[in-house]
Image (cartoon, rainbow, N blue to C red):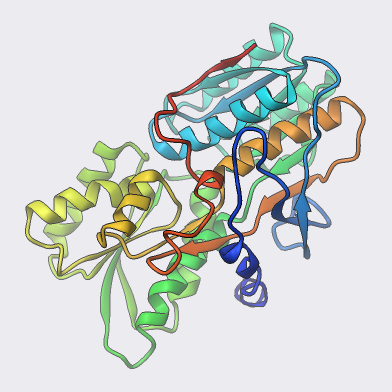
Length: 357
């Protein structure tokens, strides 16, 4: 994996400098990577400027399922699927399962969507393997299934709109590993990759651990947990009791967002640095204010937009890329004021939206 990721380190350099509009009407062309063969994160990639359809031929009925709507990351994906459904002129109903422990709820919600007549299904999956039987059942009905953001292992999927969370974790680890190369002096890091068992979390953990190996980064604690802020805050508090000398907290965006106020209240802001391995408004503000070092972005809004466009293309029998993901890059103080904010974050004031008619 390491050789593959390092060989792709140059990918996304263009994206760092690419600043454009991501309004509801004009978000494209957008730089993406296309995996070929699809559905294998180790497959070779080519770069491509993604251009969606101008309009759908009819108001297709699309069901979208998310693990939860607890944080601003999924709000960004919500904005992406809502804005693209509106732009294309299709119907969309979104359901959310309430958390990463609620796999059965997610399955039941999707089954209900299909029963009421959904013509395509977009799934941000709670479980990498746990959706496979459901995918088979839906595909047997001739209904397209698009895997967005998190990853599903089923080979029967119609398309994927997602990136490598292994590479997201790798980029976060690489960022601090470069600050502390071998021989520079050991530093203690606490690592919070997210909910146990989730495919994206396992991939992110593997990527992060690989990136810091061989450096002077010492991962003294790895704590898993749901991405609710209260849960992450408790994990961080417990870790600080056990490891009072840690110098970095690295993990999910809710981990980092919860840690900002905790470190300030304990007078630890100058002792402990924060790094997220994906991007949210809280992380954005933290970087702006000097409270967070950096975070890679996977352009979550764009992933949501592409998934809706893929669904419409499949329904209309048009050409489509089976496995697409935005080019990854790291946001830090050097580019925080110049990157394309609308590709990664929902607009200010956007509220969770569950239907487009």
